[in-house]
Image 1 (cartoon, helix red, strand yellow):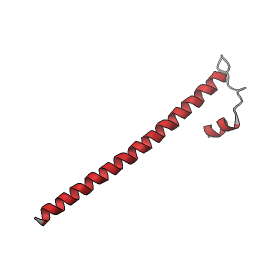
Image 2 (image 1 turned 30 degrees about the vertical axis):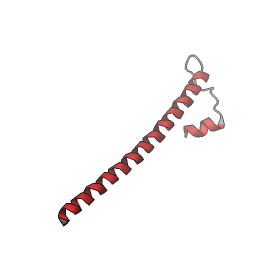
Image 3 (image 1 turned 180 degrees about the horizontal axis):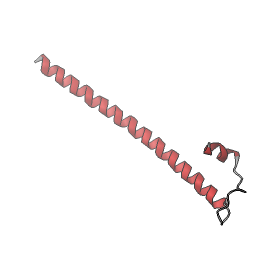
Image 4 (image 1 turned 120 degrees about the vertical axis):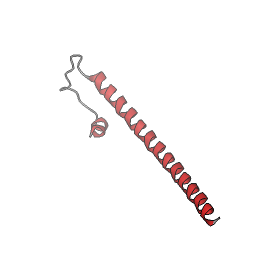
Amino acid sequence: MIEESRKRVDEAARKESERRWLVEAEARNEKLLEELKRERRLREQIEQRCDPAGDTRALILTRDENEQLR
């Protein structure tokens, strides 16, 4: 009987640990997705200002954009 009780407690603790891990993983994934979207937007902005021939030497970035690329 005590052994069964321990098993139930262990199982409940394992499930709670998995639930917390999933919540944390989802939060990290959401943060990474937002960072990816921001980087894509920045890249698109930069590409729109590039020379049509693809010459980016004359491209001047704003201070914020330059900082984000680092």
